[in-house]
Image 1: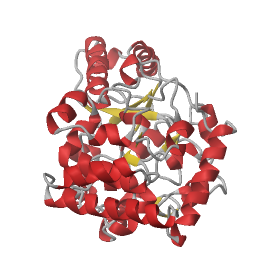
Image 2: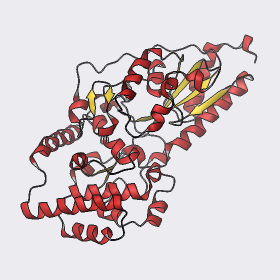
Image 3: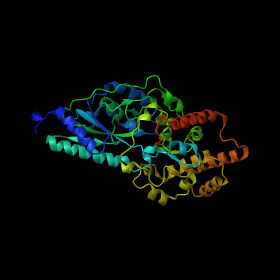
Image 4: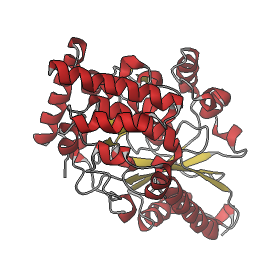
Length: 386
């Protein structure tokens, strides 16, 4: 078909159908105007809320200007894909301080390649239909404000924790985009239904949500355990608990996640028993084992050193066991200076518990109480622990 004969409204329906065939939970369409977000983006960067993520600052306002990223772009096709596994074991893992909690998006295969491949296939279907059509697929791989674009495309609204929330599916899903050069009809922007709820702000273990819709990444456990390549500031270590790769607390407490949909993708099911594994087991891995066990996983990208750093912090926060101290001391001799610092901290924490039988200093009690509230919410079914 030629541009003059294409019924673009009809084409959007075809794209939605093709998207479903490819495993996407929902597909939507938006224009590229994000000028209303530029001021907030500039302020976020000026406040250094991006921490050591230099790439955030490098591209600046290009993130709000899709046609600077890919010239001739006039529309964005946003797609989401559910990733919540059937048996997420939220409460089971968070309750047991000797278990490792890994953000549920990272339990299975790396979503980047899978979603990008599906988006490319979607682009190829549109190309076959239109003949003259240019597109670029992106999945966390480009300087683009994907959540505001998805919000404009009708896939949900950006919540106070800055994640996208869907009225019928909660927030347990990945996002990806196709930047295209055809005038597809756009959707209506989703209505924000957060209302007066501030549960995500209150539950954050490190108080990283500094105000509604603003996250200071430097405090965020996901940043500290995934993006940060240096030592984790000591002031946050106890609050991290047993979260060794990412954090889901703000999603777990969100009332809208009682509507969360389970994934239909086998690739997102837990691998290597990572949804129910002891901290000591993970700490026993050498680098070769780490690389083998995390092959095809998003976890691998943080590298073995940061992995050991995170596990050491988790062991410091675990219930006292003499075998933990032994394992930490045995690893200390061969650890890098950065990991050694965290191992020594963990040993001190374990020995303190051994002597005092008190798990946390007074200022951590609040966070423990909030964690209890989180677990009670899970058990009552406020969020799905399928």
